[in-house]
Amino acid sequence: NAARPLSDLSAEELDALASTQREAHAAQAAKGTKLDVTRGKPSAAQLDLADAMLSLPSATKDRAGTDVRNYGGLSGLTELREIFAELLWVEPEQIVAGGNSSLTMMRDVLVDLLLFGAIDSPRPWAKEDKVTFICPVPGYDRHFGLLEDLGIEMVTVPMTDEGPDADEVARLAASDPSIKGMWIVPTYANPTGSVVTQEIASRLAAMETAAPDFKIFWDNAYAVHHLTEDEAKSADVISLASGAGHPHRAIMFASTSKITWAGAGVAFLASSVEQVAWYLQHLGKGSIGPDKVNQLRHVEFFGDAEGVRAHMRRHAEIIAPKFAEVDRVLTEQLGGLGIATWNRPTGGYFVNLDVLPGTASRVVALAKEAGLSLTPAGASFPHGDDPQDTNIRLAPTMPPMSELTEAMETVATCVLIAAAEKLGGTPTKE
Ligand code: PMP
Image (cartoon, rainbow, N blue to C red):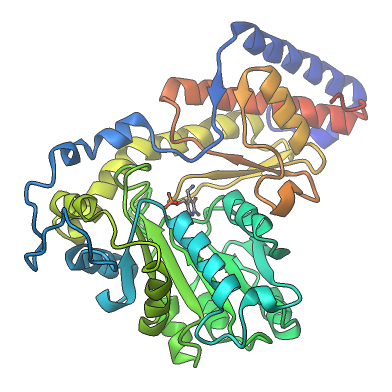
């Protein structure tokens, strides 16, 4: 009966299913194994790929002869900026190589916008009655937490396979001057895995906005993080916006957090030359220059853009089998039952699992009882509130394969129990 939709089952059949699955659940809980698929972290084997960096850099000077051990060079090493300019489809003069976190750069830009306003702002954003961001959902939880922390309001639009719902974004942005910007993860989005199409990117770059200083935070965290040979090429949103008369609309972010080391990589910001100067002018009040030793280490390790691409293929060799394993277990256990859908991403770090509406938090609670940590239900929505209680983000990269299999079997068990309870009318136990 593996492929019979659960909604076709009688109350007795649902009861029987629930009790079988509860036995599996109890057995897993009794094992006492701790499993965790909450965060998109690289595994130790992935971090090991960059261990040659432990003995780099071999030189103390960059190409221009500047001593990287000393102060200075706020915009980052030219040779590293050239490599990532090529990978991110921008010009070297449009990109900054900074510290180890792109999230920190996003926060810096938001704080600068609030305190000073952008070069195209009538006034600092903090002087507006309110500031609102458009948030495609499901999206990246830390984006939403950052806005919440800074008092920026959030309005959601649905994420589609082709990127954010552009009609809805255009309608909102045109109608409300408090709407100052939006998040987009254009390549292998966290968590849906979708890639923004050229067409959607063009529309967002060109749309009329009520705010004259509307910003697209184009978080290209997974620009080169392909899992298959079908490599997504992200749209050149900065040129598209510029060509449409909005040269300062798009700000791109990226980092090597999931290329080299998540805690000791290099982050990048790219935009119009003028907006980059605006960013550096404010940054320069709080920094005399970035960690150029780490930047040179990255330059020596990669050599060139092709070096980065080759390195990413080695990551894919490690993690693509994990994504395949998630799909295998979920398909075997949940396929055809009409109680769950999930994506098969071709890049990035996440699998997006949608369960029966009203059961996601029950699934997460059941998993916890069985020793499996899942990202809290609703985490991919502003304020942690998934109105349908349907979405669960799975992050398969960190656990070793054997643990991942066990974790996915446990997920399937919990999804089955929650669905049987829901369809059978059993009161949900919290
Ligand atoms: N953006 C997205 C979409 C992410 O998924 C992550 C990491 N989970 C980050 C940014 C964090 O980037 P960084 O390590 O450069 O701060």
